[in-house]
Length: 483
Image 1 (cartoon, rainbow, N blue to C red):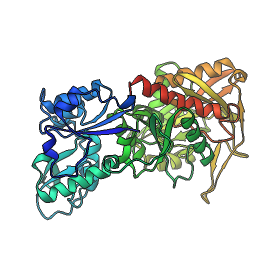
Image 2 (cartoon, helix red, strand yellow):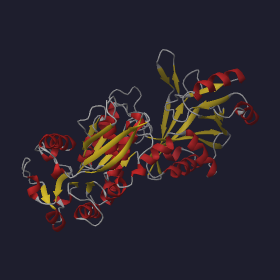
Image 3 (cartoon, one colour):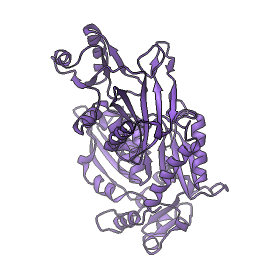
Image 4 (cartoon, rainbow, N blue to C red):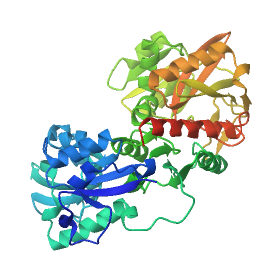
C-alpha cells in the first residue's frame, strides 16, 4: 500500500483545508527519511515553484532518488516548459462548443470545470502529471491552439477553485482522507487492469483468482481495477494489464501513466506499441534474421500494390490488419478477386496491411516468455474445419480449436530458442510467441504482449506455479526499484 505525502513550501499553506498529518513542508520532507518501514511512498509535490534548482524542483528530484513515486516528476517539469512536446493531434480530438475564441481554465489532477474540455484535461494530466495546470487556448481559423500550459500554484487559488481542487485531490488519492480498511497488511499493492465487458479477455475469471492468490502468497495485495480507475494508479506499486491491449485504447494510456508515476508495469507501453502492430513486427523479425513466413507490406497509396504483391507471393495468401488480435482482422484470399475485395476492406482501416504466405499446419506452438526466459508451452489446434485457431462466425459467435499444454522439456529445443530470440527483440516483459513448425523449420508468426493465460489451458502443466512465477517477477522488479 502506498503512503501518500503532500509536500508544500510551508505547512501553513494548507491551513484552509482539512488538517492532515500527511501534509509536510519542504524542509520536513528533505530532512526526513520517510521509509515507512520500507513501504512505498507517493509524493504530491505542491510547491509554488518548480523552476530549475528551486525547492519544488529538488523535492521531485530527491523523491525520485529515494525511490518514491512523485508527481510531478523531474522529466515532467522539464517537458511542460517545452510546448513542442505536445501531440499535434491532441486538440483536434476534442470538439468544443464554446461561443468565444479564447478559453482560460485550470486542470486539477486531470479534472476541469470547463465543459467540453474533460477529455483534453485528462490527456494533459496523463502526459505531464502536474497537480494543477493553467491552460489557455485560442481559436485560430477554426482550430483551437494551446497558447499557454504551465503549472499553477495551489496557494493562489480562489475560494471556488479551492473546493474543486480539494475534491479533485480526494478523487486522485482517497487515502489522504479515508482511513484504510483494517485488513491483512501487505507490503506492496498491485493493480490488475481488467475490462469486465470484454468478450474475449486474456484471462478468465478462474485465472484472475489465481493471480490474486499468488500475489497474496508473496505478501502482495492484487486489486482488480477497471478502465475508469486511471486516477487511482497512485495508490499502487505495480500495474498488471489483463485486458486486450492496443495503442489506441485505454490500456496504452494506463501503461504510459503508470510508467510516468514510477510503477512496475506489465505490459509496458513499449511492448504494447511493438507487439500490437504486425507491420512493425515483420520488419523487426526480418531485420534481425528471425525466421518468419514470407511477408510483404502493401500500401493503399501505392497504385501498383497488387502487381508487386502477386509477383512476390502466390495464392492462397493471408492478409492481416496491423493491430488485429485473436484472429480478428486476418483473412485468407485464394485469388485476385478476393484479394481486391478483402484488401479494400482492410485499407479502410489502415493505410498499410500485411500480406503473408499461407502456411497451413494442424497447430501453432505458443511459447510463453517472461524476463527473457520461456515459462510455458502449448499447442493451439486449428478450429475444426478452419485454418485459424479462432473462427469468427457472422453471428458473432467465436469457436476455437483444442489445445495441449506441455512441459517445456517436451518441446523441440529449436522451437523454444527461436521463440525466446523473437521475444527478446521486444523486451523483457511477458509475451506469447506463436510459431509454426514445417519440415523441422520453425517460423515466427507473431509475438504477443498480454498473452492469454486461462485456467486449465496455459496453466495445465505448471498449475499455480505459473501464477507464482509471474507475481514473483513483479515482486523482484518492485524490490529492485527500492520500494
